[in-house]
Image 1 (tube, one colour):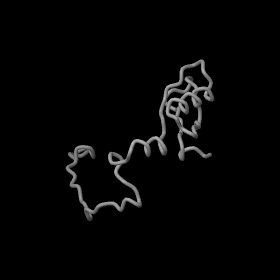
Image 2 (tube, one colour):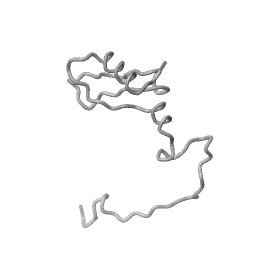
Image 3 (cartoon, one colour):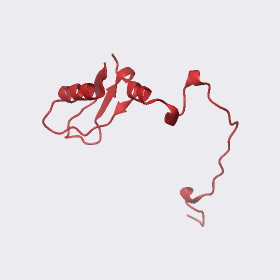
Image 4 (spheres, helix red, strand yellow):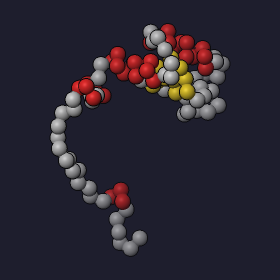
Length: 94
């Protein structure tokens, strides 16, 4: 480096092309979304203990949240921490 500042220390300016409201037919801000929409379209991250099967954990999530569809993608095995993800509702490929 020849006297240059690192990228993360550079001064940056936020530029907004146009400040407009989103048409509710095309979505909404997450904080304005009703809880039922979060549950219907959401992903539940969980840390599965070693003994229950992935199928059992998915069944528990379905019962606890009162969901009609619950699935899991990838692995829910504790041998690979940080990778589990459970999908609900429309997030499932049902």
